[in-house]
View 1 (cartoon, rainbow, N blue to C red):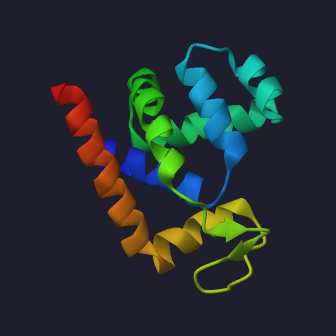
View 2: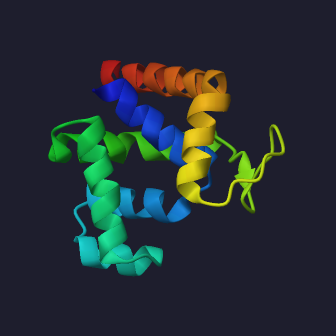
Length: 130
């Protein structure tokens, strides 16, 4: 697991329109506490801990993962969510939970996810070079 998996996770959060998770992870990357990030994003501290744990699953060093998050999340702004009101806008499937939406995007629309991940990686390369 590494950089690709971490960016894949963040892209799927964006496509699934999981704003609370992205908000909390971004605030954590800026140095806010878990409690403060949870409060500001309308979430619970336990949920924020879960988001952070999933980051660590994707990229084993949590602190480095947060540094990457700090640069990746602003790059996600151009991506439009494809899940609205628990429904996939691409295929019309009803998705009753955010985790189901994340899995659905991974299995049924992997090509879309991969294209966005590759675009983000290219943009990160340009940022590093400049």
